Amino acid sequence: QVQLVESGGGLVQAGGSLRLSCAASGRTFSRNGMGWFRQAPGKEREFVAAVKWSIGSTTYADSVKGRFTISRDSAKNTMYLQMNSLKPEDTALYYCAAYTGSYYVIPKTVGLYNYWGQGTQVTVSS
Image 1 (cartoon, rainbow, N blue to C red):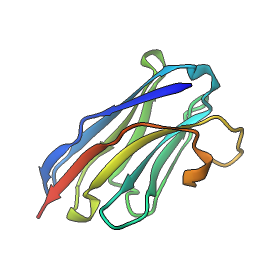
Image 2 (cartoon, helix red, strand yellow; image 1 turned 60 degrees about the horizontal axis):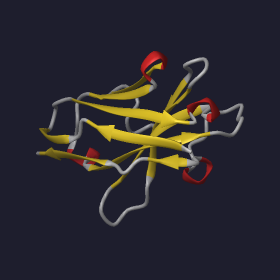
Image 3 (cartoon, helix red, strand yellow; image 1 turned 30 degrees about the vertical axis):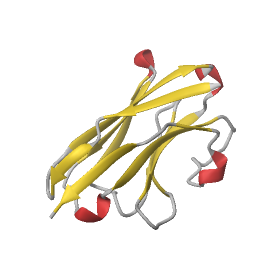
Image 4 (cartoon, rainbow, N blue to C red; image 1 turned 180 degrees about the horizontal axis):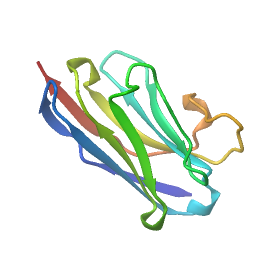
């Protein structure tokens, strides 16, 4: 099992910034990559960004490209999401997730991620 704990959410005005963190513990050696997803009320959970753990390659949803940056600290087993130029439409519950499969292309599908955190709320006011 891999345990994931998110932190860093909060309330921010449009145009502001937040940094989310996700600390991993447990059988982290089984993890091949990690990602961030978000879910707004009444909407499906959607992909935000992900990183392939071993080599640090990244991928982003078009809606956040250029505004959000995903990174990881292998020594701390922690993943980050730096969110800049936040918009009201970024308001959602943000989830950290990890996958164990071996994929050539970093997955963006909810079902391919094996482990999930509890989520941290991000609210952007206009």
